Image (cartoon, rainbow, N blue to C red; front, side, top):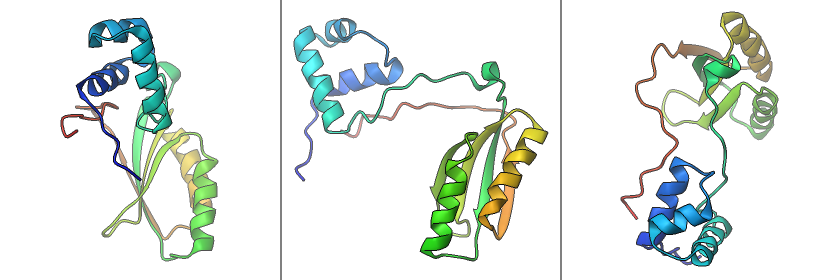
Length: 156
């Protein structure tokens, strides 16, 4: 697959969309200095090439009664396809789980979840361990010092 070439205007479009995906094409075009139709074609190309994976609205977890963020470290003593498929099914069925990463090192998986409170975490934990886990350790976020969904584009 050929490497996708992104120019300064593409990067500007991406930066603007990362800050506010609801911004109008006209507004983006004006800020980038191109016509609306050229801007629309560029956005369509970026979506087709999957540079833009999806457009979402980020909610404030506290305003939707999910104020507690937890990172769950998971270790397993089973490393086969059957167990992995079961684990995928279990985590897919828990809506409070936002991210699951298979890790290198001492940790097998790192799970990020949001819950209402400790009883909410306990319910999540009881669902999660249905995947037959070897070791589970959780850390609760006390303060978020930085959080962003914007990827840096200075390496393009």
